[in-house]
Image 1 (tube, rainbow, N blue to C red):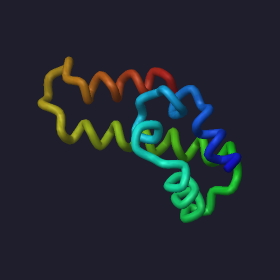
Image 2: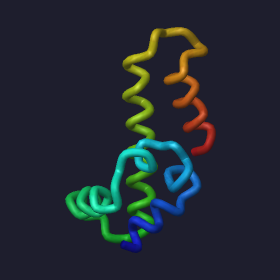
Image 3: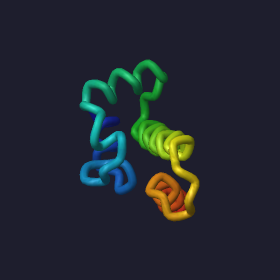
Image 4: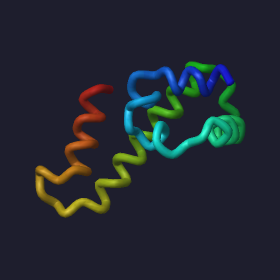
Length: 83
């Protein structure tokens, strides 16, 4: 559970961030995915969650309407500013 707590407490992907990890993953789903990826440390779990969120946002770029002010592009740009 320490890996889940590390993710949930992270300022980028944790509770209250409105990220895909925060909004859609249950604790058990996080544990299952971390185990399947053989991620056993808190640091690696946070890195995995941040990478996963970045991929999720990048995937959203495939759906955008192409204007520079569309929400998918803005979300992705903001995410990368925080990196």
